[in-house]
Image 1 (cartoon, rainbow, N blue to C red):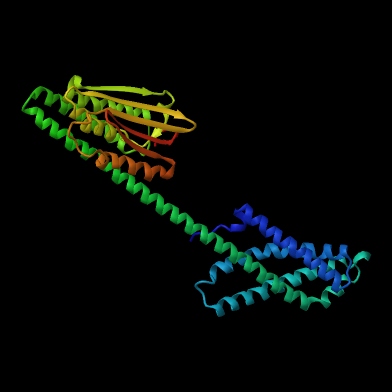
Image 2: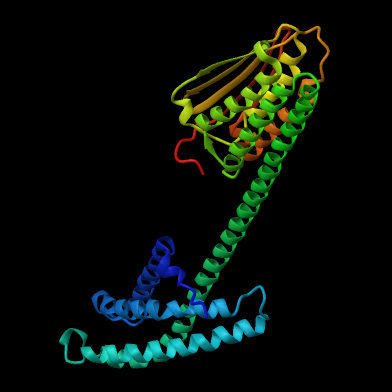
Length: 360
C-alpha cells in the first residue's frame, strides 16, 4: 500500500499558508474571548495559543479525511455527514485537552478562576471547534484542487513532450531512407560507367550509414560530430562529381561545441548537391558557415547555382521541409529557418538557441 506524503509537511508554501491561517484564527479567538468573557489579553493568549497550536497539529489529519471524501465524486450528504462527525470528534478531544491545560493554572494567582470560566464556556468552545474543523477542511479541499490542477498541467506537458519526441523520431527516420534512395540510384548509374567508382561509393556509403546508426539514436549531438558526418557524406558525393564539387567551411570554434539535433545539416547539403551543383556543367561550391552570437547559433548553407539550368522546385523538397519541421518541433518559435533563392546562389539560413553540454 502506497503512503501518500502529507502536502503540508512536504511543501513549504502550503506550510507557510497553513501556519498563517492558524495564526490569524488564534488572534481572532483571543480577541473574541477577551471581549466576550472579560479575560485579560495575557490570560487569553496564554490559554488559547497552545490550544490553537494543538488543534492545528491535530487538524493535519483532516487532509486524509478530505482525500477519502472528494467533493467531485462523493454524494453531498456523505461529505457533510463525514465532516460533521469528524468535526465533533476532534472538537471534543480538543475541548477536553484544553480543560486539562486550564487546570494547570488553578494555583496561579494571575489565572485564578480560569478553570471555572473555561468549564462555563465548554459548549461554546465545542461548537467553535467544529467551526475550526470546517475551516480546516475547506483549506485542504483548496490544496487538493490546486494539486489536481497542477497534475493535469504536468500530464498535459508530458503528453506534448511525448508527441513532440514522436514527431522528431518520425522526421529523423525519413532522412536515411531518402538519402539511401538517392545514393543507390547514383551507384546504379556508376556501375555501367565506372565499376571501380561504384564499388568505392558502396564502401563509403556503408561507412556513412554505420556512423549514423549510433548518432541517430541520440537526441542532441555536438556540431563537431555533425561536421564529421558531413565529411563522410561529401566523400560519397565526391565520387560522383569529382572536381566539380567543392566544399568550403567557416565554422567558429565555439560553435563546434554547440548541441544540435543529429543529421540536421545533411539534408541541406544533399539538396545543395542535387539541386545546385548537379545541374551545373562546370560544377560549383557549397559553403557552410556557423557562428555563435548573443546566445544564438547561426548556420548558413549556400551553394552556387545556374539559374538557366532546369531543376526541381527547391522550396518543396523533402529535405528542406524535414529540417524546418524538426526545428519547429524541437525549438518552436526560438528557432528560425529561411530559404533565400538567388540568381547565382541559393542560401538556407537558420538560427537556434546555443546549447552546450554532453550529447544526449
